[in-house]
Length: 310
Image (cartoon, rainbow, N blue to C red; front, side, top):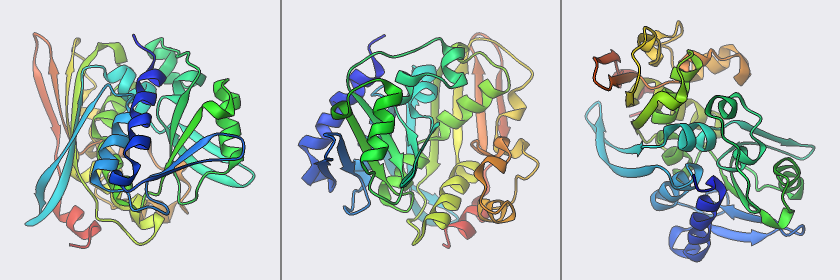
């Protein structure tokens, strides 16, 4: 398999070449790392969000955007499909890098994770990347400083001049787009957390509504999670049958039915305390090759309409 980072960097070059058209900005830090602003000081937009989604999945997934409907209101939806779910979703798109320094905090996703390869997903998949350039998408409402780029360079074992940080706030068009594109990833991750072999997931498709951009990060985080847990749907094609498929959708979670804003408030916004089974699409079809097809879960447009303030 081609290096995930090599494929992603080709798309980063595209973002730099068409920065003006995408309403994004790029600049170099003093340590020669490159920051691309996808929605902090620049507006970003739908196309920027779709391109960033491709970068997060190292070019191994195809995102698309169209107009749907929630509780009678026209609302955009994002759909993403891939025939390489283990690599594109678990080893790249998953937001598994807590980027923290003395003066910065953000949540990282993208192929830079595969150069470090310390998360459980990489052991399950059996993949570690090696390349001299790397990209990390960082969900944050601040522009990343040199310390953030240095941490990425050190852990990924590359030069700081080889680091590309793609920053965006949750409360932005890009934030809403890229988070809606996670339905397939979260379904695949939930299935593997239940003990299923990620290499037996043959293909994955996910779809979720694009949350309206909120005026603060906490509201945006709650809305984008509601989008998946109450409006997200996914279809997985797998090789082996199992008796765990009914536990994949968010409807299997004990706290399902409560907006994420309430759940977060009750836990004082300590993300690690949120039950992991809530982070999944609302409805999932699992199609076993040569075997049965299972459908579990249901969406909740009424809750979404309340969350989106429609």
